[in-house]
Image: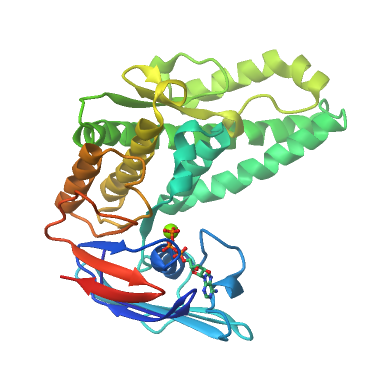
Length: 365
Ligand code: ATP
Ligand code: MG
């Protein structure tokens, strides 16, 4: 996908921006000028929600009543016209080629977003990493989406029965069977995705690092399992056995003690767990690398590239790493939008550089 035209009206501090983006676009400006707002607008148009607020009304420019966004983009040799309007009275209206799209409309703009908070992918809690994984696989597979909902419902039921000390009888048995089935499906889908991500991440990390370092990611189950022979059957058998073993413990503690809601992703840099051993800059580079790998894996699975949005991705990286990352993005086959406070010592040939000042956009030649 490549955005050819972008129009933003009354979005945050932006009254009006119209631009024809390049393959690589850089928004530069001082703090609080509207750089992140532009990425937020693209993300909002694509997904229908913001990554900074749950209240759509916050996105309308102060003292205005409505906002409007439009992107015209290429998708598989076709031109798609996507609009989003929101006003306080009538709510949000999304249209693709002038029609209201369904939730899983294939023509919707697809983005991958990096925000400074994504540093927590490396050093944050396992929940953060599971969310990252679920968010990606949900986008790619409606079946996964369905199984995830099913699993979280059955987990709630299972926990409730454990809590009420009713973890015996027939109904618990039925709940337990559904629990095992949906757990196994989630784990297999996650393992498959992690395999693709692992292959991709390794190559990218070597390109964006000055020193050759080896990045590896592994899916970490919440119960012991012989990693050599994982498939639906072996996973189902092992999970059933482990549940039986943990049964007394679960009844005592009155909560589910194993399952994909407790799994994790282990990230290793040169064989050592990155959360504990990587420096701040390295952690930043690893989380960026995961996002770049997300773009590539999206392509491998879907056959086309999403648009990449990178907010403050250069912060904390040294000059060499910055330039390596920029070179990688300049060479990449997909479109990219990047924000930065400064572009000191960075060679950005072939990129469109825009200066953002108080919500206005000036192109730098
Ligand atoms: P930084 O370098 O600090 O990240 P930035 O250029 O990314 O800065 P943005 O977050 O894009 O800054 O824009 C922030 C500005 O937008 C703030 O000055 C904020 O007050 C303003 N702003 C936020 N919401 C609205 C709104 N609904 N209407 C008008 N202005 C808004
Ligand atoms: Mg910002």
